[in-house]
Length: 516
Image (cartoon, rainbow, N blue to C red; front, side):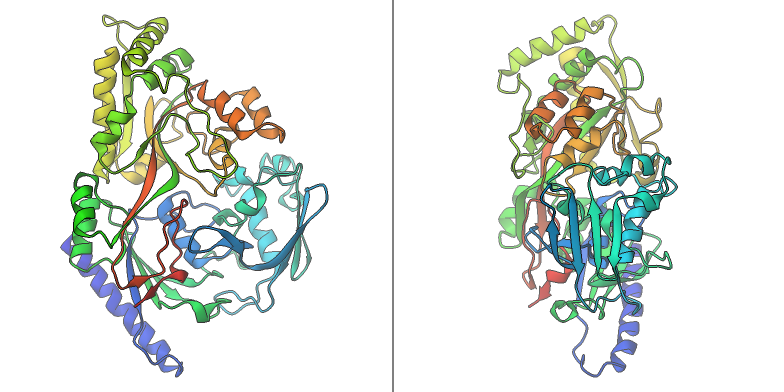
């Protein structure tokens, strides 16, 4: 919560930061103007800021400011050249060759070379690192052997041909590689292994214990002359109402979200400051498939059908869209698959849900009991949990025990089987492509929260001839999760902030922002 105490801490923090900037400016006579600063809501405290180990959106927001991959994204979320100035692809689509821009430097002044990118990718694939996003590199040659410990990391299919050229070899042609290379797992790593040294538009200057982050402009960034804002402050406000109050009082320039319960009024009051757009992100409930009774797809079907998604999104009131599948609408090159009952009447769906529940062996006299786990912070999660529990009770007679856990403890217990039956979670697309949603349910994925194991599904993912629509169809028919809704990006942006562009990735690198 954004309290007076945390604000006082932030003010002190800013004062110290301003003093440091002033000292630096004394040595740089070409920068006489007062430093420009933007304060951004971050929705929570980031976990690890190591590109190989980062797992949460709060960390990724910061990492896209402090690092740059071979490719990157522009203000509208479109993929563009980053540290690489050019690349080519072999005729069979299995070999990519990249050439780095000349004169690239790390934030400490060291030269950035192709070896730094090779080092970063090998580190992600190494089993000792324990990267939960390593699966994104699954198409690179020898990845399976490296991640399983059967081959050393230097056998991964990536090679520095020269200080400015590198080659990536794939096991099969894929459309996803260039998108993956914009992500944190593909960021370079300094030879010292110090991941606080970056190559992005900003450097990490301070990290407070409450999760407040101060970033300072990296004057060695390749396009430093185009970066207009000197300092970026990320504040970990978890409660949207508190964040809105901080925005109103001028303490925050860009919010992470807009509180749902007063969204309509805020939009009416601040029409020119409200930015709302569809985004590639899914809110869902994961079932623990490793244990009875949730290893029964008929039970999972019953629970999924018993949730009235249109009613749920109306209750939330944030503009989210009901999810009848797993891949959000608007993904490039994807034809969405949806549940066959999605367009039927609510009465018909209710009857089918009750029939599936009975077939799974449950009755009003012998109801299912569920332990539903969600995280504290955003009141939204509790509202969703209460609504879903009521629907399960009303439609099926299910008894749901709700357990609220603090964010970091919640993250730690995700993979602890028998510690939960149903867990709320969300997945934000890493790139604009269906596989960023489908690949997380691969048997070997660290992000496979429900522990879904399906050899047929894994084979479909490996088959480049199978359409992503067909893969999604197979997945939803097995009900590993209950998708609830697709997010929309919602932010308040002060009128004096320019360069904030709505996009389906809902990513907004600070390097494109300016102050009017």
